[in-house]
Image 1: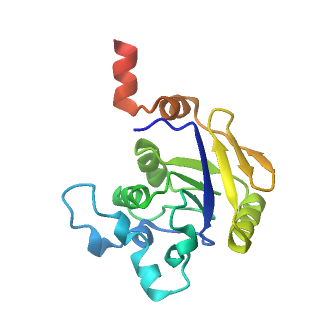
Image 2 (image 1 turned 90 degrees about the horizontal axis):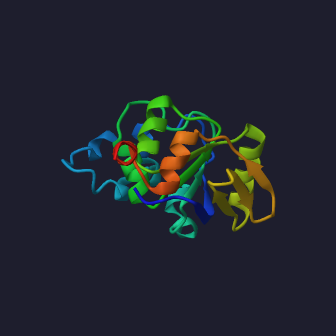
Length: 179
């Protein structure tokens, strides 16, 4: 894992609740024997069905922060969903809530998940749709700052925070504390 301290990026507005793992990476693409090759199929069905789908827009091509609504990553336990997101450049997701299995898969793969309240999420999504909306996430301070100079704080597990800041997965952490 790479250390995660700060991230500044344009935000991708995914104005959806209950984004399940099959939406993120459809089952027909789960044919690889490695964890590579999934990013190109991120939200494939939605991209094919809706030409105006946010991930079809060149505007968000290099964005690393995704904003979604409630219950992101629900559905099956496939870790492939996290692999597809990371391979497409997503390093952080801001949503109201996440499924437990997706949350653990994301954290273990170095994707920072931040939970904020529905009114904040709604405002961020609106701003990201309407304008070039830049967010800065500071994990050390546990803050999200908008391009409009709004500042929001978030809670994050202290153990996971330490691992993210140092770029350690669980095994790296155990090896460090036992040596």
